[in-house]
Each structure stands twice: as structure tokens, then as C-alpha cells.
Image (cartoon, rainbow over all chains, first blue to last red):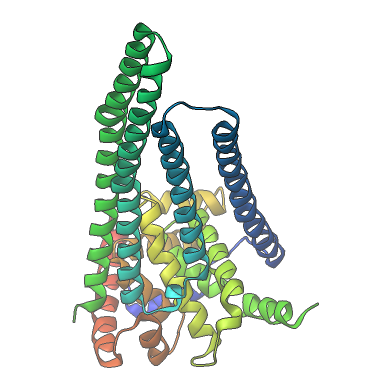
Length: 199
Length: 165
């Protein structure tokens, strides 16, 4: 039968010690800076390439209807909006001082951040889906006037089927999983927050 | 070597062991504890220029360590389990001594506490002064003393129960 003082003595005689050296930490600091920069660089390259391709199409191809130009503009808008949001998030994470707040406040920050990310990953994707559907619809006007009727119907069927599959299979599944995951985190954080407030 | 690096090395040498204990007590897993300790010191480095002497540096580092531990839960569903005892022993020696088994049992018992209790008791075991623990955990000193009394009793009870099994 041991008392707390015995446990304290035991604690001071323990052998488990960190096996991470100071140099390893410095190396990780350099790597983590590089990783983020690299990730941002490649995302920027992909977004820039997509925008350039769309602009080239805009300039090089002479479309017969204004609806196609509007479709291109909507698609470019979607890509830019997504990228700007990603960039803003990276900046918010790296400059966040919430880490230095009291644990209770930090937990609230984590809850809000996760909820916001969840909204971005679910509701905003839904908005992209709608805008892209509108863009394809507008492009369909061009197709109606420029391709044979059977090709137009095939295009419409493929696009509609693809959107239905994305919406009712992939998107629903993703949102369900994402919501369940976030809810578990929020519940856990709420439980811990309560522990810090209890008397 | 720059001044910031010298200061950082000093901070690491002075605090890494205690931060590791805190992370180990919280996660009950040596690998996760090493990861969290690394993450803590990376954040310390990133925020070092924002330190304004409003508290002791060690308190400031502990606060970052506690918040880093709290965020661990949101990214990993890992929980300390009763298998911890064997895990700690496996990690450190093939034939555990009686003392090592007792330490493992102590960590196992800490893992059975609630999250905030693990954080507080690890600091108590490391003999961090109560006012500093109160500042780190954001709990008033009076409330903290009551909590510590309760946690000490709970931990001792759990340890003795586990020892009998």
C-alpha cells in the first residue's frame, strides 16, 4: 500500500526520458518551414496553370455565345476563391497566438477553428458544385449551337450523371464522415473544457 | 551561434525532460510524447520573439506544451489504455526491473485519470510550484489546491488498486 509521497519518489527515480535531441528539433524546424513553403508553392503552380489554360482558351478560341465566357469566368472565380481561402487559412494557422492562451480559451479556439474548417469543407464545396454546374449549363448553350444534336445530348447526359454521382455518392459520403469526425472532436474538446471549469 | 539559438538551446536543456513527462503522462505513449515534445519546442521557437516577460519562461513553455497536448486529442483518437504497462516496459528494456514496472504502473494509473487531472498531477509530481501550475492551467489557486488534493487521492487509490491486480 503506497501513499502519494511514495509515488512522488517513484516518479523522480523514473528512467523514461526524451529521445529527441536539440539538433533534431532544429532540423524539424527547418524542414517544417520548407514543407509548408513547398506545399504552398505547388498549390500556387497548379492554380496558376489552371488559370493560364482557361485564359488561353478564352483568348485563343472564338466562342459564339457570351454564356461560354461567363462559364469560363465562373470557373476561374471558383478556383481563385478556393486558393485564396486556403492561403488565408495557412496564414491564420501560422500567425495564431491562441496557442499561448489559457487552456480553456485554447479549447474554444480549437472548437471554433474545426467548425469553421468543417463549414468550408462541406457547405462551400456544395457552393462550388452549384457554380460549376451553372458553368457547365452555360457552356451547354454553346454546344447546342455548335455540335450535332446527339453529341449535345451525350454531353448533357455525361455531365448530369457525373454531377449526380458526385453529389449523391461522393459528396454525401464525405460530408457524413467529415461531420461525424468533427462532432467527435468537438464533443471531446467540450468534455475537456468542462474539466477545466469544474470546481 | 545567434542569441536566439543560444537561448533556445538553454530552454531546451532546462525544460525538455519536464515537458516530456507532461506529454508522456497525458498520452501514455512514449512515441507520442516524443512527437508532442518536438512539436512543443518547434512552437516555442516560432513564438520566442512574442515572449514579453509577463511570466516565467518555463511557465510560458508549459502553457504551450499543455495546449499542444490538448490539440493531440483532436488529431488522434489514441487513448491511453491498460496495455500501456506492457508498452512502456517493451520500450525500455527486455527484462524490466521492479522499479521500472512500478514506474510503468504509475503511468498506467495516470492514464486512467481525466485529461486535465493528468496534466495537473504530472506537474505536481515534477514539483512545479502551485502558483505556476495555476497560471499554466488557467485555474484559480484556491480551486487548484482543492483539485490537487482530490487528484492525489484518486491517483493513489488507482495505483494501489492496479498494484493489487
